[in-house]
Image (cartoon, rainbow, N blue to C red; front, side, top):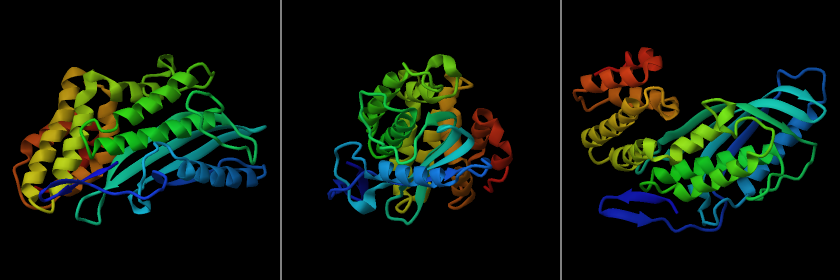
Length: 295
């Protein structure tokens, strides 16, 4: 159950029966020529139904409290019901007492291959590897839910991330890439392993303080909220001190770079010279964007 800030403390939203995700799934097959396009439309509809109608956690959510997210599947090869693709996964969460949604997760998985027969039934079974399509989509559904929960309670998404680990462990016996340590250094295996590692615990702590103590209190005290968010970003920098090339640093800034630029370019004014130096150190790939911050 997701938690929200009140001026006097916390309250728990009462939920009515509904699934957890409000997800838009798109299947892009523009690169595929000379084949029946209907299967891609059928796949897209099936995936939307699967993601949005599956009860992932057993918790009860109001329909307007479902997690807004998207999964964009870009098919690069298709032959005899075998697909090669990438999948872009994004999610956001509402900011208390505003109409703004803050991005939480933005990740492009380039190792996504699967078999699919048109009108194939898609069913999630936690301890069974039925197909790589179901396993990958289910894995990211739990990642979205887990990271969302982390922004409302410190390490609040642990159970959901453990669900994702169960999917990963089951899928490791398959021949599909992305599930194992030997498949590269930035894949599903390392994403989840790092999220659950004590070595990188500052990442999940930063997510909580940035959103719950920072963004959600912006309506009360913008400067105080920005001070808290600055400390959260510095927590991400603590990861850099341990592992300069840590995967989760990129994951954090892929979601947050534009929001950080926007927030720190606005009022109230504060001295953020040290923060800019930190941002340039830990995320130099975004140096051109950090340079646009007006302060």
